[in-house]
Length: 135
Image (cartoon, rainbow, N blue to C red):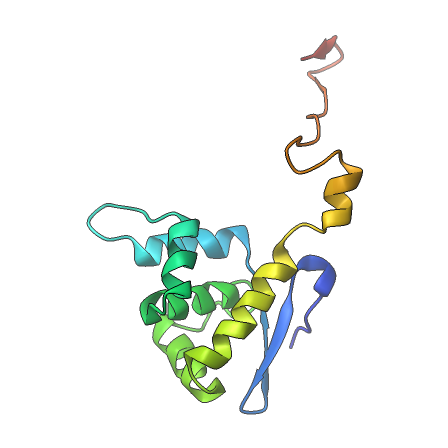
């Protein structure tokens, strides 16, 4: 069983004596958007998090399931709901999901070192073959 690596934004939750490693991964968030799409409309991650904050249980279960995807891909959406219940309900898992979200956010010190959040780092110049540098 994997253990959580905080440097990778991973957080561990123990439910009924079983450890689960969760992370807000890019692929997990895409799976989440696919899960909560309705009528051809893909919700934004921000709108899903707003739904969670307002107590939408489907969104809470979906976000928890999405955080499990990297290390526990065998867990179904329904099983994620069972885990939420075993952990003490959506209120207990909500605090954990907030912790997981914070763990995956960039360190403010890193953003400062890069010149602030509003200025992303410059893309590296690429070379194609042995020719000149392309901009």
